[in-house]
Length: 395
Image (cartoon, helix red, strand yellow):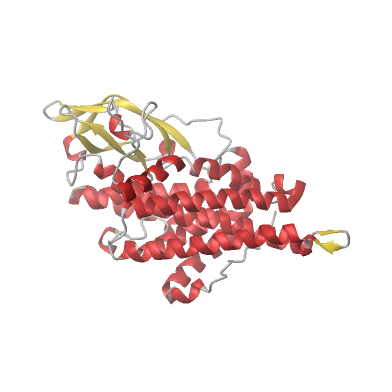
C-alpha cells in the first residue's frame, strides 16, 4: 500500500494570502485524505466502485455544503474554504471531489437558495453530515450543452405533479436519497422538483463501462409517471437561470479541484525526477526534464492566482458566470497538460497504478467535458467580451 507523500507546491507564497482558518481547514482535509482515502483509492478505481465508507468522513471535514449556514447544519465557511477543500479532494481523485461537489453545489445549494423552509429543514442537516446523499438531474440523453431543450416534464394533476422523462450522466444517482430534478411544466417553464428515492415509477440504474471517474458512481434518472407531492417543488426560482446558478457554484469548485490534480501530478513528477537516475545522474538534471517541471509550476502558479482572486470575488458576490467559466476551462486544461507531461517524466512507471498520474489523466478527460465542455466555456468567454452568443444560430 503506497504512502501518500504529497507536498503542496506554493511557488509564489500563496499561503501568506490565506487566513489561519483557511490553512487549518485545508490541513484537516489533507490529513484525513492521506490517512483514509489515499491508501484505498487505486483499488476502488480499478474495481470501478465508490468507497461508500468515506461519506461520513467527508461530512466531518466539512466537504458537504461548506458554505451552508449553521442554522441548517452547515459549517458556514467562506468560498475560499470551499475551494481549498475541493482542491484537496481532487488532489486525491476527481471522483471523490465529484461526489462532494454534486452534494454541495448541485443539491444543497439549490435547496438552500430556492427551496422552501420545510425543504431546507428536512434535507440540509442530513446532507451536511452525509446521512443523506443527493444528485442533480439536468443533463438528458439528447440535451447536454443545450439544457434548455430538455423534454423531461411534469403536469399538474390537482393534488400532485406527474413527472415523466429521463436524465443521464448523473453523479451519485444510484446511491442518492433525493434528486434535484429540473423539468418543464405545461407552459414550458423550468422548475426544480425534489424526487425522493422509493417514489413509484422512479429508478436510478447505474451506468457501467467508464474508463474515467471509475471511483465515482454514475447513473441515469428515469421518471415513468412519478407522482411528486406539490410540496416537493422548489418555489424560490424558476427558469433556466436557476440550474445554471448551481452550475456556477459547481464550476467554481472544479476550478479549485482540477488545480489539485495538477499539483499532485507535478509533486509526483518532481519527486520522481530527483530519485530516478539515468547515465549516473538524476533525470532532474536534464534540460528537457527541467523544462517540463518549470512549465508545470508556472501554470500551477498562474492557476493558483486565478482561483484565489475568483474566491475573493465570490466571497464579495462579484464573480460573474463568465469569470467562473474562464477559471474552470483554464484549470482543467492545464491539469490535463501537466498530467501528460508528468506521465512522460515517470516513463513507463507513469502508466502503472503505483503512481496517480494515469488515473488523474483519465479522470480529467471527464472533467474537461462535464459542467460545461471546454469549447462551450471558450464560447462563454467569447460572448462575454463581444456580446455575441456564438452557440446560438437563427435557422
